[in-house]
Length: 395
Image (tube, rainbow, N blue to C red):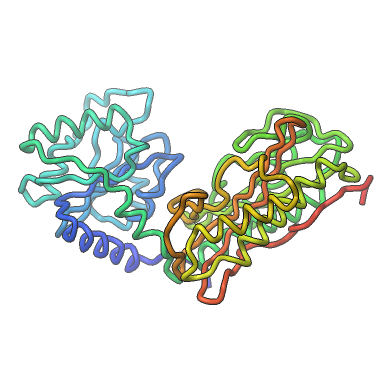
């Protein structure tokens, strides 16, 4: 049976959110998203905008509204789990067509409708770090028209709600990782010197689509040789050379849910610098997966990781992390960092985002896999190639 999030679960998300809003005395929630960061919109409506941006209005009681741009109504109605959809000019594409003949809604009208004609006293904004200036101006105008309700940052309210996954969400994540692991197996089998970074990425992405992905979880990258010490990057047209260490970072999206795998492949026998980075990364990842379980404080997981990496003398190459939440985005709340102080809960999902960058030798790698927190420990969503991989000639 295909893993999906059914309409009932979408409705339950609205209900749970409204209960938290009432507790926090938030009269209206405005969740915002775009093509790159659709997480909040997808969570409540299943809609994933393209070109345009989108929002969801959730009153403390009553029916939610999906807000879209002028061109996306037929698309939105074909996928949205929210039946009330309104088009607003401020949500248009960035080339800013004027749509002079279109009958569009204003932000003020959409909010008044969502509130049943009442003015909200407080509006919680979700997606504050994403909100575009144009949309914010439309919101400011609505605020003036609605008696100046107080604006609150409400990202954490929704992030905490999303942190523990439902059985259906976990099933979707397992499928997303199955797809990504298939792609990683093919990449490791076929990567050779002489290929460009883009050609290797093409192997991964084509396999994902063949296996049923709806898209990449993020723009996947392959980084080869000197200059691979990039924690975040893109393919740059470099040709893989013999003895290069190649950073492979790929992930598929399935039913909205992101997956990711990071591996390193040495195109020959690993030299001492390459070997030490890989072995330290693998030890750090093992420490995370062996330590995490429901009830353990997040700081304990970080400390176990740090000590494992330090035992290889690689602790000065740690840049961040090494663990973050995952779900509708590859990276989402919460993080596990050196200052983290909260207990892990059963049903949370994370990534072992173990990146070590040796800036002196300009070499960098990431070992990344998703995992589920259980009462007994962890369930890894992927594990293929979690080792030192040396590609000797045509082996």
